[in-house]
Image 1 (cartoon, rainbow, N blue to C red):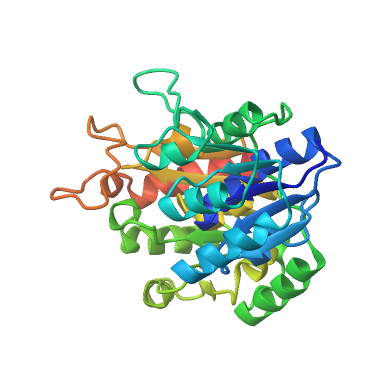
Image 2: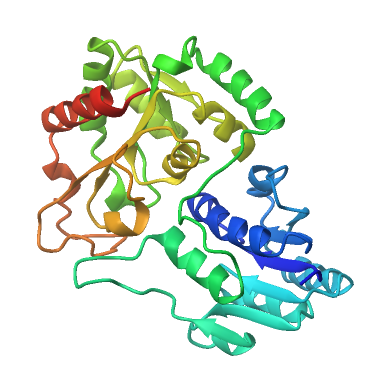
Length: 336
């Protein structure tokens, strides 16, 4: 096939990173077909300049932008569209772009907008989950994509490198190859480790000779400030966009903390990680690679996927002392 391909993945940071394996599947299977990727403006800088992508379409979250983009894509006369996101906006873009074949997940309602669908998840067992990148590659392969490892990968572009170096310098990171990033906040309150524990871990890592830089996203400035106050000497890093964040993470020794977008960026750049899991299932968000270690609660309600919890005691069950021992052992085995 030589007709253009449209791939839709609107958000969020970690999920956009995970989709890179599926995009690689399409680009390798159809090397002569221009591959156009549709995402939201915040995430476009992450994909721009990546191998195999012809153009990244930046689409604001408005009805006007949704329909304008869909009809602009029609001028390309695409042969294939794949919706890797699966909400109403992404399904409309995939269907209205005029592709001869539209693929997506068999989700209620919007699944009717696709010509062909695959199951959203395929769990290998009662307490097992399919890795999110594997689910995305499975959809790409069903649409004709190549068989590739379900592992996210990003190439460090010049923009990422340049802006990342500036962000690290502004944070006071003098030797990234020795520095460990700590992600204290989570996208859900239930995924966030108690801040006092995170501070004690930061202190212990510094005492063991590992400079620590705390990383947070928009709206997490207060968490970072409080962590820095509780653990003096902890550096604080915020980035102006995802390209700069990616460039800042790529040269680090390791990244530890909550399951988060920065963690998936680290995985895509081969940076070792260590993560704690309570309400989220580690199988769904961790590749089969020993340099990405984890702690998982033993509570029977684990992997509940609840964003709020009346008794929340899964992550508090990981003490700062236990976390320090686990992280230091992991760094000894896998740290750069």
